[in-house]
Image (cartoon, rainbow, N blue to C red; front, side, top):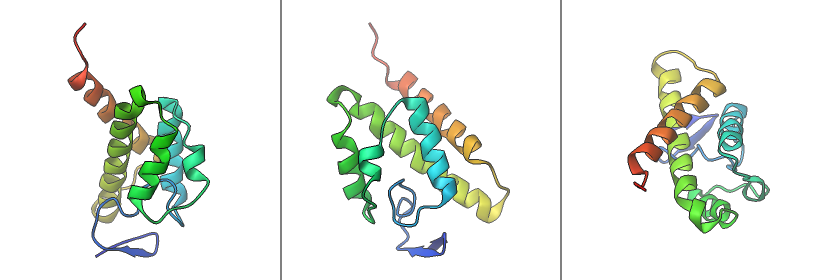
Length: 121
């Protein structure tokens, strides 16, 4: 069982990391805000209604994303959640990083993803 922000999860690493979760920490909110501003993605519609379900949040958020940008959105969401999870582990076992540093790590992963899956013209 994992405890983060005073709430227990069922062990799923993504349970507490999406931006519209009830009682999301300021750190998680700041990281998502930085990443979405870099990516020029407006998640405001999906943030209006807090959700305790990652699937529900993901489906709501993707409604506002144009079809040709959904792959980028999915990559951004996956890498941001992954880096938040890694930061949770660092804070548990190592040292702390700022929200900007975690967002920068997410950005690096997103850029590597795009380079790996870029189509040749």
